[in-house]
Length: 260
Image 1: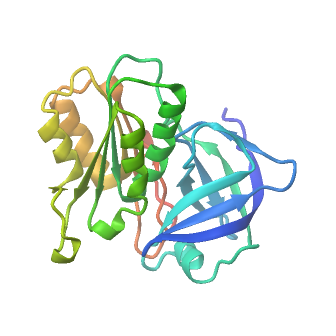
Image 2 (image 1 turned 90 degrees about the horizontal axis):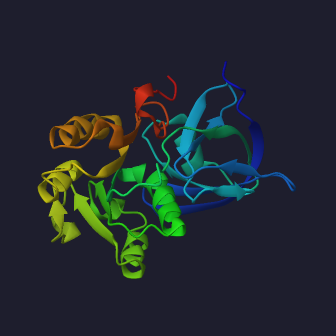
């Protein structure tokens, strides 16, 4: 029988637009309260009617009284519309957590490949910062795929990681670049960029987080190219029209909808 997941009440302390459709939402717990979580896990925002909206922790493992979430706006989304149009500092939110098993599986001797689609970068950021904290020196690669250049909402961060960590490599990929992007980098589907660089994935570990469609397409292709199924760790989310984006959920829970 599963134990009850702790429920917290938090206050909104910061709203910062990171991109046209991505908001950094910072929550603070009451004085004396902290939440402990592992990198890659997520929490469920509890709406007034009991519906849940799930978002990943974006920082490495720890115990904290402040939480930063990356909220992507979904057209018609009940919660995300509120975040972008009416939410203000001082508002209160209830959430439950931590949840999820999308965590680093260490120790290991395998090179690590991280693939993020859009705001799937949130838990991948958490995992990578945890890996840096642990001092992992094996090769680590981040492939981050978005549609347009403007969708890279923290583009300078993985660039800094690449400067600070010689074993880390960042490969940004645009699927629908336009003339305004003036893009000379990689294009197409992000998982296909990985397969072009790693036609044989045996001996690697892959951590993938993005939309259900992205993960569902990528995982079988990775396995077909030699990736050991036990070394493929994935989360998927299912944004729905008329509902907020569901955040990363364990792959074995596909498809986990956030609500009607």
